[in-house]
Amino acid sequence: MIDPIHSLAFSMQANRGIYAVLLGSGVSRAANIPTGWEITLDLVRKLARLHDEECALGPEQWYVEKFGKAPDYSDLLNALAKTNAERQQLLRSYWEPNEQEREEGLKQPTAAHHAIAWLAAQGFIRLIVTTNFDRLMEYALEGAGVVPTVLSSPDHVQGALPLIHTRCCLLKIHGDYLDTRIRNTPAELAEYPPEFNTLLDRIFDEFGLVVCGWSADWDDALLSAIIRAPSRRFATYWAAHGEPSDKARQLIEHRDAQLVSINGADAFFQATQRYVESLEQFSRPHPLSTEAAVASLKKYLSEPKYRIQLADLVAEVVHRIVETTSGPAFAAQGDPVPDSQTMTARVRAYDAACSTLLAMAVSGGYWAEEEHYPVWRRALERLSTRNSNGCNGGYVLWLDLQRYPGTLLLYALGLGAVEAGKLDFFGKILSTIISSEYSKDNNAAQLLPPFCLFQDGTSTVRFLEGMNNKKLPMNSWIHSALKHVKNNILNENRYDLSFDRLEILISLSHAHHEKDSDYEYWIPPGLFFYRTENRERILREIEESITKHSNESPYIKSGIFGETFEECLKEFETFKEFVSTIRSRGW
Image (cartoon, rainbow, N blue to C red):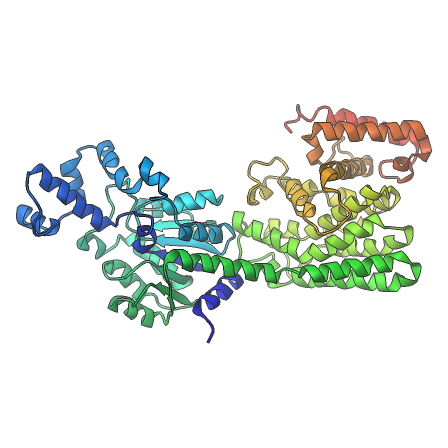
Protein backbone atom coordinates (compact mmCIF):
# COMPACT_ATOMS: atom_id res chain seq x y z
CA MET A 1 0.00 0.00 0.00
CA ILE A 2 1.31 3.46 -0.89
CA ASP A 3 2.24 5.54 2.14
CA PRO A 4 -0.16 8.54 2.44
CA ILE A 5 2.77 10.94 2.83
CA HIS A 6 4.11 9.72 -0.53
CA SER A 7 0.70 10.42 -2.09
CA LEU A 8 0.76 13.90 -0.56
CA ALA A 9 4.21 14.59 -1.98
CA PHE A 10 3.16 13.46 -5.47
CA SER A 11 0.00 15.61 -5.34
CA MET A 12 1.77 18.67 -3.97
CA GLN A 13 4.59 18.50 -6.53
CA ALA A 14 2.23 17.92 -9.46
CA ASN A 15 -0.33 20.53 -8.35
CA ARG A 16 1.83 23.47 -7.33
CA GLY A 17 -0.01 25.92 -5.10
CA ILE A 18 -3.34 24.10 -4.71
CA TYR A 19 -2.80 22.89 -1.12
CA ALA A 20 -3.59 24.93 1.97
CA VAL A 21 -2.04 24.02 5.31
CA LEU A 22 -4.11 24.15 8.52
CA LEU A 23 -1.89 24.39 11.60
CA GLY A 24 -3.06 23.99 15.19
CA SER A 25 -1.39 24.64 18.52
CA GLY A 26 0.37 21.27 18.33
CA VAL A 27 2.83 22.71 15.81
CA SER A 28 3.88 25.68 17.97
CA ARG A 29 3.65 23.75 21.23
CA ALA A 30 6.89 21.99 20.27
CA ALA A 31 8.57 25.42 20.43
CA ASN A 32 7.36 25.86 24.04
CA ILE A 33 4.70 28.35 22.95
CA PRO A 34 1.65 28.16 25.26
CA THR A 35 -1.85 27.78 23.87
CA GLY A 36 -4.34 30.61 24.27
CA TRP A 37 -6.16 28.76 27.00
CA GLU A 38 -2.92 28.09 28.86
CA ILE A 39 -2.20 31.82 28.83
CA THR A 40 -5.70 32.58 30.07
CA LEU A 41 -5.27 30.20 33.00
CA ASP A 42 -1.85 31.65 33.80
CA LEU A 43 -3.35 35.14 33.85
CA VAL A 44 -5.99 33.84 36.27
CA ARG A 45 -3.25 32.57 38.57
CA LYS A 46 -1.60 35.99 38.47
CA LEU A 47 -4.91 37.66 39.25
CA ALA A 48 -5.50 35.27 42.17
CA ARG A 49 -2.06 36.19 43.47
CA LEU A 50 -3.12 39.84 43.47
CA HIS A 51 -6.05 38.80 45.68
CA ASP A 52 -3.65 36.89 47.95
CA GLU A 53 -5.56 33.71 47.15
CA GLU A 54 -4.58 30.28 45.88
CA CYS A 55 -6.29 28.39 43.02
CA ALA A 56 -6.73 25.23 45.04
CA LEU A 57 -9.47 23.84 42.78
CA GLY A 58 -7.81 25.10 39.65
CA PRO A 59 -7.64 28.57 38.09
CA GLU A 60 -10.85 28.20 36.06
CA GLN A 61 -12.93 27.18 39.07
CA TRP A 62 -11.40 29.93 41.20
CA TYR A 63 -12.32 32.53 38.57
CA VAL A 64 -15.91 31.28 38.28
CA GLU A 65 -16.38 31.37 42.04
CA LYS A 66 -14.77 34.79 42.31
CA PHE A 67 -16.47 36.57 39.41
CA GLY A 68 -19.48 34.41 38.58
CA LYS A 69 -18.44 33.68 34.99
CA ALA A 70 -15.87 31.77 32.98
CA PRO A 71 -12.49 33.45 32.53
CA ASP A 72 -12.29 35.75 29.50
CA TYR A 73 -9.02 36.70 27.87
CA SER A 74 -9.97 40.35 27.21
CA ASP A 75 -11.40 40.89 30.71
CA LEU A 76 -8.23 39.53 32.26
CA LEU A 77 -6.01 41.76 30.15
CA ASN A 78 -8.04 44.80 31.12
CA ALA A 79 -7.76 43.85 34.78
CA LEU A 80 -4.01 43.26 34.69
CA ALA A 81 -2.89 45.91 32.20
CA LYS A 82 -4.83 49.07 31.41
CA THR A 83 -3.23 50.37 28.21
CA ASN A 84 -2.39 48.76 24.87
CA ALA A 85 1.31 49.24 25.49
CA GLU A 86 1.08 47.59 28.90
CA ARG A 87 -0.94 44.69 27.50
CA GLN A 88 1.58 44.11 24.73
CA GLN A 89 4.46 44.07 27.17
CA LEU A 90 2.58 41.64 29.39
CA LEU A 91 1.93 39.24 26.51
CA ARG A 92 5.40 39.35 24.98
CA SER A 93 6.80 37.03 27.63
CA TYR A 94 4.47 34.25 26.54
CA TRP A 95 5.49 34.31 22.88
CA GLU A 96 8.86 36.01 22.73
CA PRO A 97 11.93 34.20 24.09
CA ASN A 98 14.04 35.57 26.87
CA GLU A 99 17.81 35.22 26.72
CA GLN A 100 17.85 31.77 28.30
CA GLU A 101 15.03 30.48 26.09
CA ARG A 102 16.82 31.80 23.04
CA GLU A 103 20.00 29.96 24.02
CA GLU A 104 17.95 26.80 24.45
CA GLY A 105 16.27 27.28 21.07
CA LEU A 106 12.82 27.76 22.60
CA LYS A 107 10.05 29.97 21.17
CA GLN A 108 11.82 29.89 17.81
CA PRO A 109 10.50 28.52 14.49
CA THR A 110 10.64 24.73 14.54
CA ALA A 111 11.78 22.37 11.81
CA ALA A 112 8.11 22.12 10.80
CA HIS A 113 7.84 25.89 10.36
CA HIS A 114 11.01 25.97 8.25
CA ALA A 115 9.86 23.07 6.06
CA ILE A 116 6.51 24.76 5.43
CA ALA A 117 8.36 28.01 4.62
CA TRP A 118 10.51 26.16 2.07
CA LEU A 119 7.41 24.70 0.42
CA ALA A 120 5.92 28.20 0.29
CA ALA A 121 9.11 29.72 -1.13
CA GLN A 122 9.10 27.12 -3.91
CA GLY A 123 5.42 27.79 -4.67
CA PHE A 124 4.05 24.42 -3.54
CA ILE A 125 2.04 26.04 -0.73
CA ARG A 126 0.53 29.49 -1.04
CA LEU A 127 -2.02 29.47 1.79
CA ILE A 128 -1.48 28.79 5.50
CA VAL A 129 -4.39 28.82 7.96
CA THR A 130 -3.42 28.76 11.64
CA THR A 131 -5.17 28.89 14.99
CA ASN A 132 -1.92 30.05 16.62
CA PHE A 133 -1.36 33.58 17.92
CA ASP A 134 2.44 33.48 17.67
CA ARG A 135 4.58 34.74 14.81
CA LEU A 136 6.80 31.71 14.33
CA MET A 137 5.35 31.06 10.89
CA GLU A 138 6.00 34.64 9.83
CA TYR A 139 9.61 34.44 11.04
CA ALA A 140 10.21 31.17 9.18
CA LEU A 141 8.71 32.59 5.97
CA GLU A 142 10.85 35.72 6.19
CA GLY A 143 13.92 33.52 6.67
CA ALA A 144 13.00 31.72 3.43
CA GLY A 145 12.66 35.02 1.57
CA VAL A 146 8.85 35.07 1.58
CA VAL A 147 6.90 38.10 2.77
CA PRO A 148 3.38 36.78 3.42
CA THR A 149 0.08 38.61 3.35
CA VAL A 150 -1.04 38.26 6.98
CA LEU A 151 -4.77 38.34 7.74
CA SER A 152 -5.67 38.30 11.44
CA SER A 153 -8.83 40.42 11.68
CA PRO A 154 -11.99 41.09 9.62
CA ASP A 155 -10.67 44.47 8.46
CA HIS A 156 -7.53 42.74 7.12
CA VAL A 157 -9.71 40.39 5.08
CA GLN A 158 -11.80 43.24 3.70
CA GLY A 159 -8.74 45.06 2.38
CA ALA A 160 -6.81 42.03 1.12
CA LEU A 161 -6.05 41.10 -2.48
CA PRO A 162 -7.84 38.03 -3.85
CA LEU A 163 -6.06 34.81 -2.96
CA ILE A 164 -5.07 34.19 -6.58
CA HIS A 165 -2.97 37.37 -6.55
CA THR A 166 -1.04 36.60 -3.37
CA ARG A 167 2.22 34.69 -3.39
CA CYS A 168 1.68 33.47 0.17
CA CYS A 169 -1.24 34.22 2.50
CA LEU A 170 -1.19 33.53 6.24
CA LEU A 171 -4.68 33.54 7.79
CA LYS A 172 -4.54 33.74 11.59
CA ILE A 173 -8.16 32.92 12.35
CA HIS A 174 -7.80 33.33 16.13
CA GLY A 175 -5.84 36.56 15.85
CA ASP A 176 -2.32 37.79 16.61
CA TYR A 177 -0.88 37.89 20.12
CA LEU A 178 -0.28 41.65 20.00
CA ASP A 179 -3.95 42.26 19.22
CA THR A 180 -6.26 42.03 22.24
CA ARG A 181 -9.06 40.73 20.03
CA ILE A 182 -7.67 37.21 19.87
CA ARG A 183 -10.16 34.36 20.26
CA ASN A 184 -9.66 31.62 22.81
CA THR A 185 -12.78 31.16 24.94
CA PRO A 186 -15.51 28.67 23.95
CA ALA A 187 -17.89 31.54 23.20
CA GLU A 188 -15.33 33.28 20.99
CA LEU A 189 -14.54 30.06 19.15
CA ALA A 190 -18.20 29.22 18.52
CA GLU A 191 -18.68 31.69 15.68
CA TYR A 192 -16.44 33.66 13.31
CA PRO A 193 -17.06 37.09 11.73
CA PRO A 194 -18.80 36.94 8.34
CA GLU A 195 -15.57 38.04 6.60
CA PHE A 196 -13.73 35.01 7.97
CA ASN A 197 -16.56 32.62 7.12
CA THR A 198 -16.67 33.81 3.51
CA LEU A 199 -12.92 33.41 3.10
CA LEU A 200 -12.84 30.00 4.79
CA ASP A 201 -15.69 28.78 2.58
CA ARG A 202 -13.58 29.58 -0.47
CA ILE A 203 -10.46 27.98 0.96
CA PHE A 204 -12.08 24.70 1.98
CA ASP A 205 -13.93 24.48 -1.32
CA GLU A 206 -11.14 25.42 -3.71
CA PHE A 207 -7.96 24.09 -2.07
CA GLY A 208 -6.64 20.76 -0.98
CA LEU A 209 -5.94 20.61 2.75
CA VAL A 210 -3.08 19.43 4.95
CA VAL A 211 -4.06 19.44 8.64
CA CYS A 212 -1.49 19.14 11.43
CA GLY A 213 -1.49 19.90 15.16
CA TRP A 214 -5.22 20.61 15.35
CA SER A 215 -7.57 18.41 17.40
CA ALA A 216 -10.89 19.96 16.24
CA ASP A 217 -12.19 19.66 19.81
CA TRP A 218 -12.53 23.32 20.73
CA ASP A 219 -12.91 25.34 17.53
CA ASP A 220 -16.59 24.90 16.70
CA ALA A 221 -16.63 27.70 14.13
CA LEU A 222 -13.67 26.22 12.26
CA LEU A 223 -15.17 22.75 12.41
CA SER A 224 -18.43 24.10 10.98
CA ALA A 225 -16.59 25.86 8.16
CA ILE A 226 -14.93 22.61 7.08
CA ILE A 227 -18.18 20.64 7.28
CA ARG A 228 -20.16 23.08 5.15
CA ALA A 229 -17.59 23.03 2.31
CA PRO A 230 -19.70 22.00 -0.70
CA SER A 231 -17.07 20.02 -2.60
CA ARG A 232 -13.71 18.33 -2.35
CA ARG A 233 -11.86 19.16 -5.55
CA PHE A 234 -8.55 18.15 -4.01
CA ALA A 235 -7.58 15.69 -1.33
CA THR A 236 -7.32 16.28 2.41
CA TYR A 237 -4.44 14.84 4.44
CA TRP A 238 -4.88 14.72 8.21
CA ALA A 239 -1.62 14.28 10.13
CA ALA A 240 -2.22 12.93 13.63
CA HIS A 241 0.07 11.88 16.47
CA GLY A 242 -1.86 9.05 18.08
CA GLU A 243 -5.59 8.50 17.70
CA PRO A 244 -7.66 11.41 16.32
CA SER A 245 -10.42 12.78 18.54
CA ASP A 246 -14.07 12.00 17.80
CA LYS A 247 -14.60 15.41 16.18
CA ALA A 248 -11.48 14.98 14.11
CA ARG A 249 -12.71 11.58 12.91
CA GLN A 250 -16.00 13.21 11.93
CA LEU A 251 -14.12 15.67 9.72
CA ILE A 252 -11.83 12.99 8.32
CA GLU A 253 -14.86 10.99 7.25
CA HIS A 254 -16.65 14.06 5.90
CA ARG A 255 -13.66 15.14 3.76
CA ASP A 256 -12.78 11.54 2.86
CA ALA A 257 -9.34 12.49 4.17
CA GLN A 258 -6.17 10.44 4.16
CA LEU A 259 -5.08 9.83 7.76
CA VAL A 260 -1.30 10.16 8.16
CA SER A 261 0.16 8.76 11.36
CA ILE A 262 3.10 10.90 12.44
CA ASN A 263 5.66 11.10 15.23
CA GLY A 264 5.43 14.87 15.34
CA ALA A 265 4.96 17.90 13.12
CA ASP A 266 8.69 18.36 12.58
CA ALA A 267 9.24 14.88 11.15
CA PHE A 268 6.05 15.08 9.07
CA PHE A 269 6.78 18.37 7.32
CA GLN A 270 10.48 17.63 6.92
CA ALA A 271 9.60 14.36 5.18
CA THR A 272 7.05 16.16 2.98
CA GLN A 273 9.68 18.73 1.97
CA ARG A 274 12.25 16.03 1.28
CA TYR A 275 9.90 13.96 -0.89
CA VAL A 276 8.60 16.97 -2.84
CA GLU A 277 12.16 18.17 -3.45
CA SER A 278 13.18 14.71 -4.66
CA LEU A 279 10.25 14.55 -7.08
CA GLU A 280 11.07 18.03 -8.33
CA GLN A 281 14.65 17.08 -9.04
CA PHE A 282 13.57 13.84 -10.68
CA SER A 283 11.23 15.74 -12.99
CA ARG A 284 14.12 17.74 -14.43
CA PRO A 285 16.08 16.32 -17.36
CA HIS A 286 18.38 13.63 -16.03
CA PRO A 287 22.04 14.76 -15.92
CA LEU A 288 23.11 11.64 -17.80
CA SER A 289 20.73 12.44 -20.65
CA THR A 290 22.29 15.89 -20.93
CA GLU A 291 25.79 14.44 -20.78
CA ALA A 292 24.90 11.90 -23.47
CA ALA A 293 23.47 14.63 -25.69
CA VAL A 294 26.60 16.78 -25.28
CA ALA A 295 28.83 13.77 -26.00
CA SER A 296 26.87 13.00 -29.17
CA LEU A 297 27.03 16.63 -30.20
CA LYS A 298 30.82 16.74 -29.85
CA LYS A 299 31.15 13.62 -31.95
CA TYR A 300 28.92 15.05 -34.69
CA LEU A 301 30.83 18.36 -34.63
CA SER A 302 34.14 16.63 -35.15
CA GLU A 303 33.69 15.64 -38.82
CA PRO A 304 31.60 16.95 -41.73
CA LYS A 305 30.33 13.42 -42.43
CA TYR A 306 28.11 13.72 -39.33
CA ARG A 307 26.32 16.86 -40.53
CA ILE A 308 22.97 15.05 -40.89
CA GLN A 309 23.20 13.48 -37.44
CA LEU A 310 24.15 16.87 -35.98
CA ALA A 311 21.15 18.56 -37.57
CA ASP A 312 18.82 15.78 -36.42
CA LEU A 313 20.13 15.85 -32.83
CA VAL A 314 19.71 19.60 -32.40
CA ALA A 315 16.34 19.56 -34.15
CA GLU A 316 15.09 16.77 -31.89
CA VAL A 317 16.07 18.60 -28.70
CA VAL A 318 14.55 21.86 -30.00
CA HIS A 319 11.35 20.01 -30.94
CA ARG A 320 11.04 18.69 -27.38
CA ILE A 321 11.41 22.22 -26.03
CA VAL A 322 8.77 23.59 -28.41
CA GLU A 323 6.42 20.72 -27.59
CA THR A 324 6.86 21.24 -23.84
CA THR A 325 6.52 25.03 -23.91
CA SER A 326 3.44 24.84 -26.16
CA GLY A 327 1.52 22.91 -23.50
CA PRO A 328 -1.15 24.26 -21.14
CA ALA A 329 1.40 25.03 -18.42
CA PHE A 330 2.81 27.76 -20.70
CA ALA A 331 -0.52 29.16 -21.96
CA ALA A 332 -0.71 32.92 -22.50
CA GLN A 333 -4.41 33.09 -21.61
CA GLY A 334 -6.33 32.30 -18.41
CA ASP A 335 -4.70 31.19 -15.17
CA PRO A 336 -2.18 31.62 -13.80
CA VAL A 337 -2.24 35.40 -13.46
CA PRO A 338 1.31 36.83 -13.63
CA ASP A 339 2.69 37.58 -10.18
CA SER A 340 5.95 36.92 -8.34
CA GLN A 341 5.19 33.26 -7.75
CA THR A 342 3.82 32.40 -11.18
CA MET A 343 6.46 34.47 -13.01
CA THR A 344 9.30 32.74 -11.16
CA ALA A 345 7.74 29.31 -11.65
CA ARG A 346 7.29 29.86 -15.39
CA VAL A 347 10.82 31.16 -15.95
CA ARG A 348 12.19 28.17 -14.02
CA ALA A 349 10.05 25.88 -16.15
CA TYR A 350 11.55 27.41 -19.32
CA ASP A 351 15.04 26.98 -17.84
CA ALA A 352 14.35 23.33 -17.07
CA ALA A 353 12.91 22.68 -20.54
CA CYS A 354 15.99 24.22 -22.19
CA SER A 355 18.67 22.80 -19.88
CA THR A 356 19.91 20.04 -22.20
CA LEU A 357 20.05 22.34 -25.22
CA LEU A 358 21.94 25.01 -23.28
CA ALA A 359 24.67 22.54 -22.31
CA MET A 360 24.86 21.50 -25.96
CA ALA A 361 24.91 25.10 -27.17
CA VAL A 362 27.89 26.13 -25.03
CA SER A 363 29.86 23.29 -26.65
CA GLY A 364 28.32 24.08 -30.04
CA GLY A 365 29.49 27.68 -29.85
CA TYR A 366 32.95 26.71 -28.65
CA TRP A 367 33.58 24.16 -31.42
CA ALA A 368 31.59 25.94 -34.12
CA GLU A 369 32.68 25.97 -37.76
CA GLU A 370 31.10 27.81 -40.67
CA GLU A 371 29.13 24.77 -41.82
CA HIS A 372 27.47 24.44 -38.38
CA TYR A 373 25.76 27.83 -38.56
CA PRO A 374 22.60 26.63 -40.45
CA VAL A 375 21.89 24.08 -37.69
CA TRP A 376 21.97 26.71 -34.94
CA ARG A 377 20.23 29.32 -37.09
CA ARG A 378 17.21 27.04 -37.48
CA ALA A 379 17.20 26.33 -33.73
CA LEU A 380 17.38 30.04 -32.91
CA GLU A 381 14.63 30.92 -35.37
CA ARG A 382 12.29 28.28 -33.99
CA LEU A 383 12.85 29.10 -30.32
CA SER A 384 12.54 32.86 -30.87
CA THR A 385 9.18 32.81 -32.64
CA ARG A 386 6.07 33.30 -30.57
CA ASN A 387 3.56 30.49 -30.41
CA SER A 388 -0.05 31.65 -30.14
CA ASN A 389 -1.29 28.11 -29.44
CA GLY A 390 -4.17 28.79 -31.81
CA CYS A 391 -5.31 31.81 -29.77
CA ASN A 392 -4.94 35.52 -30.16
CA GLY A 393 -4.00 37.70 -27.22
CA GLY A 394 -3.23 36.79 -23.66
CA TYR A 395 -1.23 38.23 -20.81
CA VAL A 396 1.49 40.44 -22.31
CA LEU A 397 4.10 39.05 -19.93
CA TRP A 398 3.40 35.43 -20.92
CA LEU A 399 3.51 36.42 -24.62
CA ASP A 400 6.81 38.28 -24.15
CA LEU A 401 8.33 35.28 -22.35
CA GLN A 402 7.72 33.03 -25.36
CA ARG A 403 10.96 34.35 -26.90
CA TYR A 404 12.92 33.64 -23.71
CA PRO A 405 14.23 30.22 -24.93
CA GLY A 406 15.72 32.05 -27.92
CA THR A 407 17.49 34.47 -25.58
CA LEU A 408 18.87 31.59 -23.55
CA LEU A 409 20.16 29.91 -26.71
CA LEU A 410 21.73 33.16 -27.94
CA TYR A 411 23.60 33.56 -24.66
CA ALA A 412 24.69 29.90 -24.43
CA LEU A 413 26.03 29.84 -28.00
CA GLY A 414 27.64 33.23 -27.43
CA LEU A 415 29.41 32.19 -24.24
CA GLY A 416 30.97 29.20 -25.97
CA ALA A 417 31.91 31.20 -29.06
CA VAL A 418 33.40 34.10 -27.08
CA GLU A 419 35.40 31.70 -24.91
CA ALA A 420 36.87 30.07 -28.06
CA GLY A 421 37.30 33.33 -29.99
CA LYS A 422 34.82 32.18 -32.67
CA LEU A 423 33.63 35.73 -33.36
CA ASP A 424 32.81 35.04 -37.05
CA PHE A 425 30.30 32.42 -35.97
CA PHE A 426 28.84 34.61 -33.23
CA GLY A 427 28.50 37.51 -35.66
CA LYS A 428 26.33 35.32 -37.89
CA ILE A 429 24.24 34.22 -34.91
CA LEU A 430 23.65 37.87 -33.92
CA SER A 431 22.58 38.65 -37.50
CA THR A 432 20.07 35.78 -37.69
CA ILE A 433 16.72 37.13 -38.84
CA ILE A 434 13.82 36.43 -36.48
CA SER A 435 10.28 36.78 -37.75
CA SER A 436 8.07 39.27 -35.94
CA GLU A 437 4.29 39.11 -35.89
CA TYR A 438 3.53 42.81 -35.59
CA SER A 439 6.44 44.66 -37.22
CA LYS A 440 9.30 44.18 -39.65
CA ASP A 441 11.56 41.21 -39.09
CA ASN A 442 14.60 41.93 -36.93
CA ASN A 443 17.76 40.07 -36.19
CA ALA A 444 18.69 38.32 -32.96
CA ALA A 445 20.79 41.24 -31.69
CA GLN A 446 17.80 43.55 -31.98
CA LEU A 447 15.10 41.24 -30.66
CA LEU A 448 16.61 38.90 -28.07
CA PRO A 449 18.63 40.92 -25.52
CA PRO A 450 16.85 40.47 -22.15
CA PHE A 451 15.85 44.13 -21.91
CA CYS A 452 14.31 43.94 -25.41
CA LEU A 453 12.17 40.89 -24.65
CA PHE A 454 9.60 42.82 -22.65
CA GLN A 455 7.43 45.69 -23.75
CA ASP A 456 8.09 47.57 -20.51
CA GLY A 457 11.82 46.90 -20.22
CA THR A 458 12.56 45.60 -16.73
CA SER A 459 9.62 46.65 -14.52
CA THR A 460 7.59 43.48 -15.15
CA VAL A 461 10.40 41.03 -14.53
CA ARG A 462 10.99 42.47 -11.08
CA PHE A 463 8.34 39.86 -10.26
CA LEU A 464 11.20 37.35 -10.38
CA GLU A 465 11.96 35.91 -6.98
CA GLY A 466 15.11 37.41 -5.49
CA MET A 467 15.38 40.07 -8.24
CA ASN A 468 13.44 42.92 -6.57
CA ASN A 469 16.62 44.88 -5.86
CA LYS A 470 18.30 44.19 -9.20
CA LYS A 471 18.33 46.91 -11.83
CA LEU A 472 18.65 44.28 -14.57
CA PRO A 473 16.72 41.34 -13.13
CA MET A 474 16.53 39.21 -16.28
CA ASN A 475 20.21 39.67 -17.10
CA SER A 476 21.06 38.67 -13.53
CA TRP A 477 18.77 35.65 -13.75
CA ILE A 478 20.35 34.46 -17.02
CA HIS A 479 23.83 35.05 -15.62
CA SER A 480 23.00 32.75 -12.69
CA ALA A 481 21.16 30.16 -14.81
CA LEU A 482 23.96 29.70 -17.35
CA LYS A 483 26.66 29.66 -14.70
CA HIS A 484 25.22 26.35 -13.52
CA VAL A 485 25.00 24.73 -16.97
CA LYS A 486 26.92 21.47 -16.80
CA ASN A 487 29.97 21.71 -19.11
CA ASN A 488 33.74 21.70 -18.99
CA ILE A 489 34.19 24.77 -21.17
CA LEU A 490 33.19 27.80 -19.12
CA ASN A 491 35.93 28.69 -16.66
CA GLU A 492 34.36 29.52 -13.31
CA ASN A 493 37.18 31.93 -12.42
CA ARG A 494 36.58 34.11 -15.48
CA TYR A 495 32.88 33.46 -16.01
CA ASP A 496 31.88 37.03 -15.15
CA LEU A 497 34.45 38.40 -17.59
CA SER A 498 33.22 36.12 -20.38
CA PHE A 499 29.60 37.03 -19.64
CA ASP A 500 30.38 40.76 -19.73
CA ARG A 501 32.31 40.39 -23.01
CA LEU A 502 29.32 38.58 -24.47
CA GLU A 503 26.86 41.30 -23.40
CA ILE A 504 29.12 44.07 -24.69
CA LEU A 505 29.24 42.39 -28.11
CA ILE A 506 25.47 41.93 -28.10
CA SER A 507 24.99 45.62 -27.26
CA LEU A 508 27.47 46.73 -29.93
CA SER A 509 25.70 44.56 -32.51
CA HIS A 510 22.27 45.87 -31.47
CA ALA A 511 23.38 49.48 -31.90
CA HIS A 512 25.01 48.69 -35.24
CA HIS A 513 21.85 47.13 -36.67
CA GLU A 514 19.64 49.91 -35.29
CA LYS A 515 21.75 52.77 -36.65
CA ASP A 516 19.53 53.24 -39.72
CA SER A 517 16.42 53.80 -37.61
CA ASP A 518 15.09 57.17 -36.53
CA TYR A 519 15.86 56.52 -32.86
CA GLU A 520 18.76 58.16 -31.05
CA TYR A 521 21.71 55.99 -30.18
CA TRP A 522 20.90 53.41 -27.50
CA ILE A 523 22.21 50.04 -26.41
CA PRO A 524 20.44 47.33 -24.43
CA PRO A 525 21.91 47.42 -20.91
CA GLY A 526 23.97 44.56 -19.55
CA LEU A 527 25.61 43.66 -16.28
CA PHE A 528 28.79 45.29 -17.61
CA PHE A 529 27.07 48.60 -16.81
CA TYR A 530 27.90 47.94 -13.15
CA ARG A 531 31.11 45.89 -13.37
CA THR A 532 33.42 48.76 -14.23
CA GLU A 533 36.73 46.90 -13.98
CA ASN A 534 35.59 44.14 -16.35
CA ARG A 535 34.07 46.65 -18.75
CA GLU A 536 37.19 48.81 -18.98
CA ARG A 537 39.41 45.77 -19.48
CA ILE A 538 37.24 44.40 -22.31
CA LEU A 539 36.95 47.77 -24.04
CA ARG A 540 40.75 48.19 -23.93
CA GLU A 541 41.24 44.75 -25.48
CA ILE A 542 38.74 45.46 -28.28
CA GLU A 543 40.26 48.87 -28.98
CA GLU A 544 43.79 47.47 -29.05
CA SER A 545 42.73 44.72 -31.46
CA ILE A 546 41.02 47.18 -33.81
CA THR A 547 43.82 49.75 -33.86
CA LYS A 548 46.64 47.19 -34.05
CA HIS A 549 45.22 44.81 -36.64
CA SER A 550 42.89 47.16 -38.52
CA ASN A 551 40.71 45.20 -40.97
CA GLU A 552 42.37 41.94 -39.88
CA SER A 553 41.06 42.32 -36.34
CA PRO A 554 38.70 39.45 -35.49
CA TYR A 555 36.22 42.03 -34.20
CA ILE A 556 36.10 43.70 -37.62
CA LYS A 557 36.19 40.47 -39.63
CA SER A 558 33.23 39.16 -37.62
CA GLY A 559 31.00 42.03 -38.77
CA ILE A 560 29.47 42.26 -35.30
CA PHE A 561 29.50 46.06 -35.26
CA GLY A 562 30.78 47.03 -38.70
CA GLU A 563 32.47 45.81 -41.86
CA THR A 564 35.50 48.15 -42.09
CA PHE A 565 38.08 49.66 -39.78
CA GLU A 566 36.56 53.14 -40.09
CA GLU A 567 33.00 51.95 -39.49
CA CYS A 568 33.91 49.79 -36.50
CA LEU A 569 36.05 52.48 -34.89
CA LYS A 570 33.25 55.02 -35.22
CA GLU A 571 30.70 52.57 -33.77
CA PHE A 572 33.08 51.71 -30.95
CA GLU A 573 33.75 55.33 -30.01
CA THR A 574 30.02 56.08 -29.95
CA PHE A 575 29.50 53.03 -27.75
CA LYS A 576 32.18 54.15 -25.29
CA GLU A 577 30.73 57.65 -25.16
CA PHE A 578 27.26 56.26 -24.40
CA VAL A 579 28.59 53.95 -21.68
CA SER A 580 30.41 56.87 -20.04
CA THR A 581 27.03 58.55 -19.50
CA ILE A 582 25.14 55.60 -17.97
CA ARG A 583 25.18 57.08 -14.48
CA SER A 584 23.61 60.31 -15.70
CA ARG A 585 20.97 58.21 -17.45
CA GLY A 586 19.84 56.69 -14.15
CA TRP A 587 21.53 53.29 -14.47
